[in-house]
Image (cartoon, rainbow, N blue to C red; front, side, top):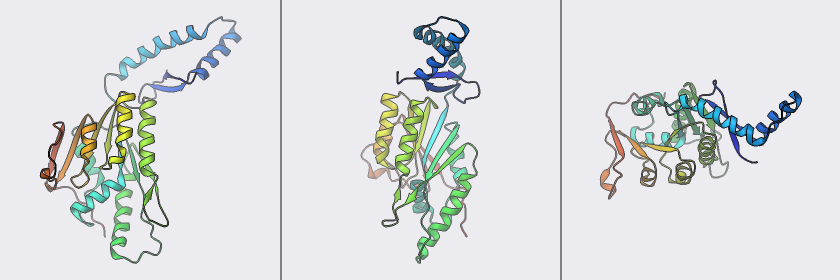
Length: 259
């Protein structure tokens, strides 16, 4: 059949667990035959649909929110604003976002700069910052950290954006969230945003830091938050900004020193 049926599951955060329809129906038919019960595929799905709708009434009372963070992009933007020694902790950033959205689960994607044969003092500072910043991130509850890798030749990050995009679309398809927050300034992620909104009918919101802002993303999401550290965002660079972007001015963030 190729479709999925959402089986009611009280232990799941979404109230259900998606399983293939053919597997679900086939299992019930085997049990029915053993019990001597005559039932058709159509009757199974009709009864299951009624049970599912009843179980979802409680889940719909509050939207379940996932946040997908382009961690490498975020950290680079923070360094541009604060330098290497005064970067705010991710927990302080999350606190600001939670004033607007109640985040249930966070997916964080990043990679580490290779330490092999590094002689530049700037690169050593970058490595030290990554270790400390990502260590704090990994300790947060309800957060899944995906570690990408760097190309041995170009030193560029590989696999992170693709993994974020696939997870965001997959999770929408499996109905594990009602709203998604995407924290990135990378316009390459516009397509998964459009797919989640137009095809899978989920709401998507975006979050930015001043030096990593994407006008294209801000127009393609349901709304945006600009964490305007040090009033660093220059509105004069843009002819027009979407009305649904909310600016949060943060003058004194909580820094995380890197020794």
